[in-house]
Length: 463
Ligand code: NDP
Image (cartoon, rainbow, N blue to C red; front, side):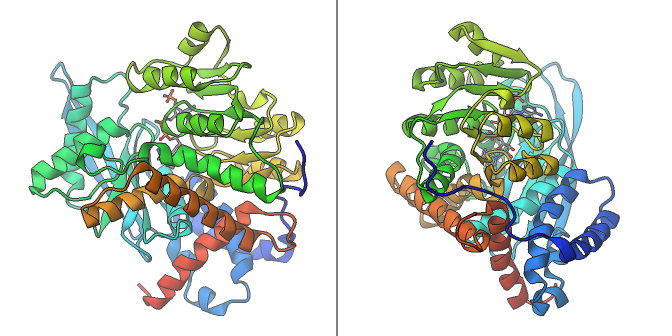
């Protein structure tokens, strides 16, 4: 790989004396949010860049802008009772975390997964606030979901659960208030059922969810947007360093919405993707997962709802159970499954095997220890709040189309998506490249995302 300019996420300045401020701040946040490790991790990552940045900006400090951002506007929690196909009653917990609406209505996905809890949703809502700010569209941050597990449930069970969930959520959302979307376990099927129930309860056909089917107000390109955006981000990073995606060997984790469209776009750019995974393990196909094999995976995951080891049987390649793909040698890596899926040991393997850059498809997939190993190893890391913002950006475009009662073509949406991702890259460079050679994308994304929300909060007074 020719490297005209070094891609690096190494911090340009040592945190040294500012470490005291960060520690004190985190101590207070930890005391207010006991037993919420994911939330504290997300706040830590932002605070270590934002606190030094505002050290000489008293208005931000005196008005306690970052402190206010770490306390969600409100957290809604509710019972979701539903009946399975055999008539048995089940009870799950539903949530909506309305994080911050300084720059627009709350916006962020719904996750249905057994691991869902308040800490995970608070971390996701917090991250979402910065991410939505980076898109340059008027959207605040929120996140929601339930500990319901759709795996192994029939369509009618999923429908009854979605109807029960929306029967409560209906009281808290609206096109100018809060507009949820999909996330892990919430795809086109679930969004359809949720939308239908909202319409039935309110007798209003409103843009209260994004990720809808194109026949009822969904934006073209929304399913593709997150995965495509992750690749556009990497394309921008490589071009900034005088390089390109063509011919690169890529490792991708996950095999859901984000992962599969990430693979599709990497193939278009001439890269070769050699892995996919799910929670049972990963497949390694050294020949590359071409368009035909990818279509097979999408059918497996979206229609047959099967496991990824079926790919290894179908295409005669290696499957490693209960393992992650980070030991496979690659030029570029794309974690697209879930939070904290890439730890220090995985990061060391990526460094050792010559990986140069990472674009995060999943939210907070890299542990703090792994971030440090990657930075020390000179791997450039585009954090999720920048790299996977394409999904929510096209959700924002879906809201615009719904308001206008209009639909743009795929080409129009894709052009806007590319331009939004280029704008995000530019903001990261502005705030993350103090010496014009090493871009610290983490720092750039954290500060750029913060500034716009902070200005709006200051303008709107203390509340
Ligand atoms: P999907 O449900 O479509 O796919 C998730 C994938 O990740 C599946 O392959 C799943 O495997 C795997 N996975 C989930 N949990 C684990 C786990 N604990 N260990 C290993 N693998 C796991 O979700 P999405 O593709 O939509 O979301 C993936 C990530 O991208 C999430 O972090 C999400 O927050 C983020 N994201 C998604 C956006 C979107 O538009 N969809 C937008 C921005 C971010 P299995 O089926 O076995 O569980």
